[in-house]
Amino acid sequence: MSTQTLSWQAREFKHYPKNLGWYITFIAISILVVAFFVIIQNDIFAAVSLALLALLMLFFSRHKPEIVKIELNSKGLKFDNIFYPYKQLKYFWTVHNERHKTVNFATSAMVNNVVILELEDQDPDKVRTFLLQYLPEHESTEETPAQRFMHRFRF
Image 1 (cartoon, rainbow, N blue to C red):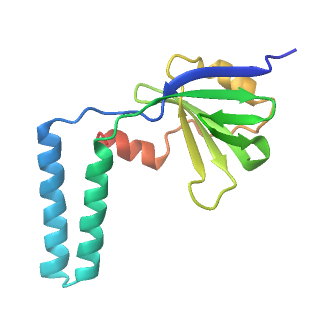
Image 2: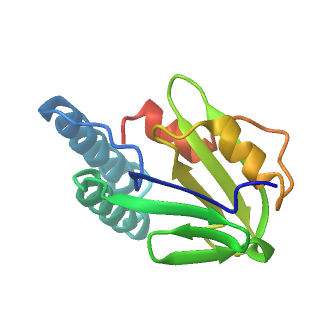
């Protein structure tokens, strides 16, 4: 007989502290990219879109993660107040390396089709064994491109 519920608390996402140099570099690169589209490409729409994107990224870079409760049970995955029944999840994979310790899920949603949960102190093998009762495991144990990007640029 297996455990019917597995739960833990974790940060919403991995947070990287940013210093003044990170912000100066980000703003400088953003200005150069926007200037390129205005001056060289003469594409005001792209320049305005990228400037807005940079402002959004700057805003979200300051957001600190909250601690949320994560629960896996026989019906699905509960992340804070969001519930994903297993029928909406295609498969899962765990990532456990020096940069990330997460369990990732591919969902059937058209947008936001990957859910990434931090494992914190939770044992990845225990989570994997529990999930194998309900979902197939993807052969990959690699970070998503978004995780690699976020780690690389400490976002």
